Amino acid sequence: MNCPHLSILVHKQAEKYGNRVALRYRDYETERWVPVTWNQFSAVVRTAACALLELGIKEQENIGVFSQNKPECLFVDFAAFADRAVSIPLYATSSEAQVQYIVNDASIRYLFVGEQFQYEVAYRIHSLCPTLQKLIIFDSSVKRNPEDATSVFFDEFLKMGEHGKRRSEVEERTAKACAEDLANILYTSGTTGDSKGVMLHHSCYMEAFRIHQIRLTAMSDRDVVLNFLPLTHIFEKAWTYYCLCVGCQICINLRPADIRKTIKEIRPTLMCAVPRFWEKVYAGVQEKINSTTGIAKMMMLDAVKVGRAYNLTYKRVGKEPPLWLSLKYKLYEKTVYSLLKRTIGIENGNFFPTAGAAIPPAVEEFVHAVGINMVVGYGLTESTATVSCDVLPHYTIGSVGRIMPDVEVKIGENNEILLRGKTITKGYYKKEFITETVIDAEGWFHTGDAGYIENGELFLTERIKDLFKTSNGKYIAPQAIESRLVVDRYIDQIAIIADQRKFVSALIIPTYELVEDYAKKHHIAYGNVAELLQREEIVELFKERIDTLQQQFAHYERIKRFTLLPEPFSMKKGELTDTLKIRRPVLYKNYSVEIEKMYEE
Image (cartoon, rainbow, N blue to C red; front, side, top):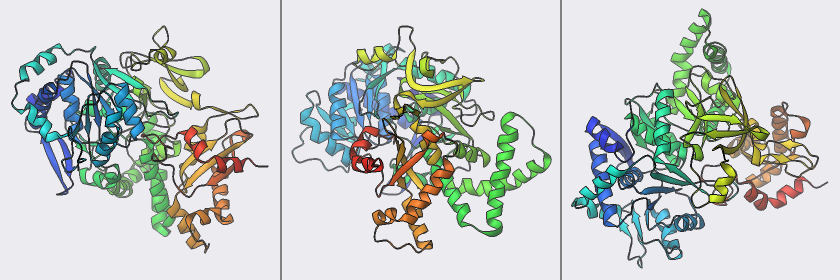
């Protein structure tokens, strides 16, 4: 199977699949999933491509898409590709400052917006963006500002291209489309606050599709894919494009908060996710086991133990399990494992790609133990996502999989992972100096991640830029400590503090419901959550759990003091990126009082 250029992909698939369903999305008024056939998909893309030319879109001009996941995001992307234009996605939760920066940096004239929030943000910064001419609104229920005389709704936009006068011009541009055309500029959310536009050419995607065909042989056009992560994220964007290339059906989840409900409605065979999703599954099962008694509890514990032996001790390394173990596993497969999968909504699962952050080994072991085909991988925006991924059924807990075909990886100074190949970005938009600092004279891209290669598998050790150095000269890798502790069901979020400090401390967001349940069971009186978290019994509870979990660390790596916070870290306060990574400088500022108190003598 050869994937065609993105400018013609949808139309080629329409020729092949016709009235077969390509996309589905939820209509929130009727609470029904609405199908979009390949023919309909192709027709809307053709109309949108004509409409863009009516607006005067030039070849390789930048178009902005500021929306949550909607079918319209894909319609606009593929219309832009047909016109040889460049699509720039903006996170749906972006602030006014972030939107203003991207619109001005990319000289965007036309910005597509999703719902009321995105419209209002975009409208407020309109006058601060000299190039911005028009907003095009996806959601027809958006209430426009009475003084807004330029914005149009997506339906009105499509009418501009319905007459087809520009069809031949679109076809001329599409005929000229080539691998060296710029496809997307993806602005990284930046844990340090800096945002850089990663340029991804069509050649990056074409190579990514080619090497995924070699690696992901279990995929087919019979798969049903749940679109979970934002399409702004390279993991979801490149994955969705590839799924369309394979001919999978894509089910688009509009609201992230609905994901638990959506999974049960769709029951997908494929879904890419970040480790946080599986951490929640793991914590939920642990809580269920802890709250169960008697034979049921013994059965659940034994099921996990049997699954670990069957899948990790034997199958993973190519050994045949003993007959007694196989029989027990098959029994649990029909009972405990199948119930768990049905409860989540993944009983039809083929495999589930997982990347974006470090996954705690305990979580990875558990997911494999209960027979869920998690495929752990590693990649960056700059590498068009996948650099490495597991090859099932042979994988190593703790690794990020085998290096993808024809992606060059070597270990440089300070054990930094260096990349080279056709999927690697040519650089950052309008930032030649920064590009030169990360892509050396030999073409190696410096990731900033440290790691090593063993038996063809890649292992990550730390983020070089995030390494902390204590005032005693010891180096600390905060992610290693955080990923070890976040598996505890009482810990929802954690941020390690150590840089230029005498010892390691932590800001901890507890799982509030569990702490309140603990207080109720142990008759601990309190007025509010903030007061409860100050109680000596609760602090001691966390101290015991932390001490147990961090035994594997060296003395200087262990948390000596911690603060339990009454409110979670949030994107609204700037403490998390759009991909839920911690922005440490913002945390240091927002919680400076709490941090300094932990270091008082």
